[in-house]
Length: 321
Image (cartoon, rainbow, N blue to C red):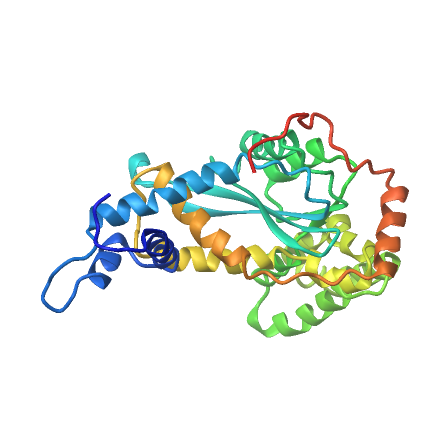
């Protein structure tokens, strides 16, 4: 690699950071071009540096996950267009979690075909094979293939239906004049103090609105038990586990970057960029406070569920960090 710099490692990190922040290879090249038009770093050299991100991504996908003492698991997907495939968007599957020490971690990232059951199953099984402990809860949207795969891989874990997606699904089926009132009732269900209180509030909501807004209430009633499962975790943790909002913010950053490239050349470029953006976002994630009392509450819930944190089929040899 030919470029004029005495500090190649620093330059490589700078270029990778600029790329992850949303600059195209042309933008980076322009940034290293002086007023006379002399280019200190060619586009080819930039591409070679950003290709290191692919190596980082491959290492990320081979990490041993047994060291992450997982409590809460989250899964979601974002869609990107691939130029080689002529236009149809493909899902970038993503998993992250909260560990027993409160640390938030990005766990896995891979391409999937329209979030099919087979793709989600392979995605989850890959993490299990690398030693991911069985989570206490798993939060997701209502994609049928995903729900089926979660039930097969982690049958004893509590499945939580994302409240952000639930709210959107219900409110889009209401006239504008009714949205504020219905949303207040939904928030009362979401923020109930106990599962029993949540079920009671949900029943009252359905009774109040199902005759006038049947489509919205059908959407609300769909998978309702899973929508109330966050009420079983310690109260201070409920706001963290009831949505997939954390990764949505990462996806927003990733989408800002992909606006520079309306369509990727191939799967490799898609994953390389998505990984760069999401990994960068994950470095800024703050820890969740977990007190001794909450640790005891979590242990009681795990015992109640008879949940063995060791997944079936986990690997026995250490993979590359």
